[in-house]
Image 1 (cartoon, rainbow, N blue to C red):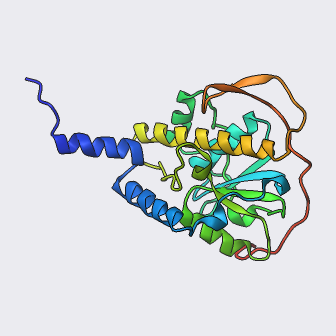
Image 2 (cartoon, one colour; image 1 turned 180 degrees about the vertical axis):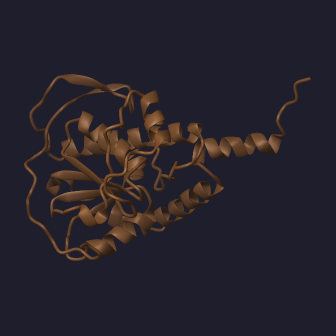
Image 3 (cartoon, rainbow, N blue to C red; image 1 turned 90 degrees about the vertical axis):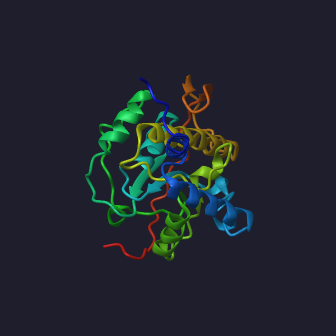
Amino acid sequence: MHRSPPAHRTLLTRLDDRFGTWRGLVRLCLAWSELAAGRLRPFDQPALARVERLVWVCAGNVCRSPYAHQLARELRVPSASFGLSTVTGQAACADAITAAARVGADLTAHRATAWEDFSPRETDLYVVMEIRQARELRRRLGDCPAPITLLGLWGRPRRPHIHDPMTLSPAYFDTCLRVIERSVSGLVQSWRQAGHNGIQGPQRRVRANQRSEKKGSGSPTSNTKYRVRGST
């Protein structure tokens, strides 16, 4: 005889599918409260006209930032990515590769870059997934004046915390990638509206919102390097 799952189990499953875990929901709620209080203003609405490269950042550079980086490549946007706590050369995690493949993206060639092996530029915009990453990166950047933003602030609806999907359910991986797609699309659109149209190429369908967007390359990137904390 088939038995229906307990109501509390169904609720927990839905929570996990949407937010990763209950911790993901709590951190999102805390992020919303910081946004409402104005404490995220330093990471909201940077001056995009000065930005020549989008740099996608997460913890390991094996799940979230590789997918954002891949979407940006498809949109012909000057990009890079790295992890705040990772080892250079590490492949994207198997679950991320599988989840990305479900939406037609290929992460098999991705290799992580550690913070210590990354060279910052003044005209970069660092795009992070979590508030704690934004604050840690601001500390590490030291003298480099490049702005930092939260990726989830560029999607609709806004989501100031994009929880790490590592080791979590396939359903949450799908949720996480959808949030990243919407947010990358919104950021790239705003970046182009700020004057970075580049050379227009053929149109393609963007998975994030099922609409066409023109390809274009950004302005030449600067080679200026700045002293950063914690680098070798």
